[in-house]
Image (cartoon, rainbow, N blue to C red; front, side, top):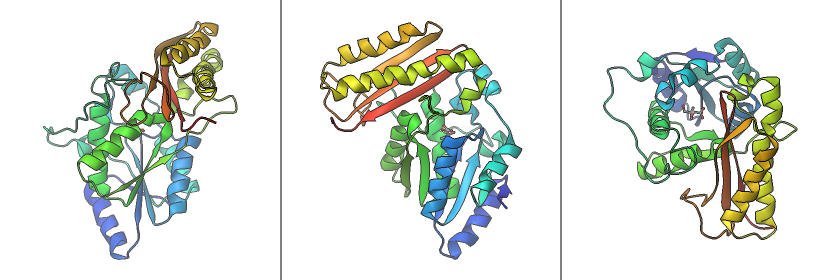
Length: 284
Ligand code: PAF
């Protein structure tokens, strides 16, 4: 039975008993609406062993549009059953008053890594993510914390926070899970109409096209971006927000492509914004 813990003090009391018994603690931070991509994170955490906590908190400070926050899917009963089926030990489900009591004046800002990709269009987003993740790491004090590679910029930002602030945790990146047609799993996919769902594969197709060019030896980022963007012409209902080729650690555009390189994009299908990326580690 997954234990439901709603307050920081209850969670801390439970975890200190676990620590006294010598067990390692794994944390899987989520905003709920759990899907097979989260399933992969939870399974990895459970396989790695110890006591596994999933946090479920739709963090208001990382949404820069109120309508996006309001429409974010929420279904706690289904999420708890999902955790239960994967043998998660505890779910930490605080409300916003618990997480942000007393109007906090402190936040975590990561400069540089947020100038490209999702950063420019989502002001304050990564500050919200970095702050809530730092709080969750301080609350749970896990040995390992698990994040999906679909949100690659988030993963890079969190690794940097942990390094810069000397937070004693291992950050484990988990590969993206995809639908058979390539669409990366996302809690937002359930907001797509059936036409939008069909059109949504264009993002993955564009990134794959760019990956193929890089693998074939193309070194000019402009050419890779041009041909990737051309794929979106087949799907006029999709609005491209960005399509970039960047250094996978600094997340800055490259002048010349040498693997490893990160190809990442974001597109809007109706009111829903989707992101995806592929890391080209080495040329084949
Ligand atoms: O990836 C997410 O679901 C969120 O950004 C996270 C890491 C749980 C922080 O709210």
